[in-house]
Image (cartoon, rainbow, N blue to C red):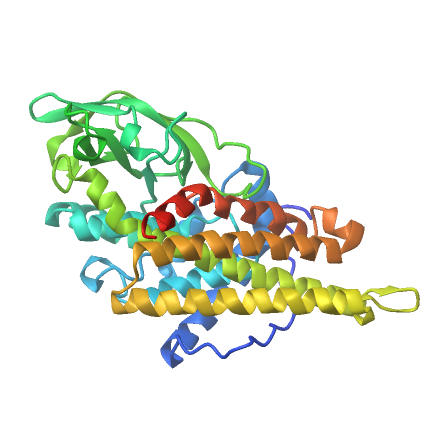
Length: 396
């Protein structure tokens, strides 16, 4: 497929869920139609070119902003729609439907923007949120460092108090939206108590600030069109007014937002598994072997029955967590469990979808091949699933 090719997205009919979804209303359905059209027309045709360059085109963000798909849960006063998180969920699900792992819209809109909304000063909100909603400004958050992984209390990036500014030094790795980012929330140590949770702060660093540089997009096994980069900070002067919240409160702020971030991963994994199943189901119904459709063999029918059951369990779990999130009752343990179980279920299901395609499942141009590697990351980011098990076990 050439860069100029514009294939038409042909999705198989969606599988009827085991239980009807009751979480969405008619206003959500109307919004979904527009989002679906956007991903089919503006994203799907370009996946190959974007994978080759390691990031989506910059103007996609402006188009998404104009279409009302960025920062939808932010207040209207700051350029958002003032919508509930079900609208944000629709963007995640429709992105998964076309297999588009490239656009980092959800991290920008549902992780970075909420930090500004909840902890930012009025001046920070006015300066950044409207431009994030329009797509003029791309946001990222820089937590992970080489060698620290999920251990945020032991980060090495430091911000030294120098009077009216901080001097920031360190590096971050695996940063989604890092290469194109215009604004980065950087997690850094600002204290010397030796207690990581009391010494951590968040600060806003703009692209172009002297001493702040970016590596090239990292070459990953999957999610090849997603902008993931390493960031470097060498004597970066960060004005005191760019501190997010209060000094030393960074770790607490991170913990308060992690439940939604982990549920987001479960939402994306669930939607991706459902799409892969729909594609594989249609493939084995049309593919013949030994004179009959592959789907006619009992082994295949039973395999699909198992997969459909797992998908039903995951869908119910995710939707119940969504209801709890909307009601303000989602617990960190429930979010961790959803992230852990659904991400692993997703990998199990898509592995079977690859098998159902036979040799074609190993070919990159087939959606299940890309889904197989794209969705493996769900078990790693947002805290590895090993960390999720540790968090859940603490409550037992």
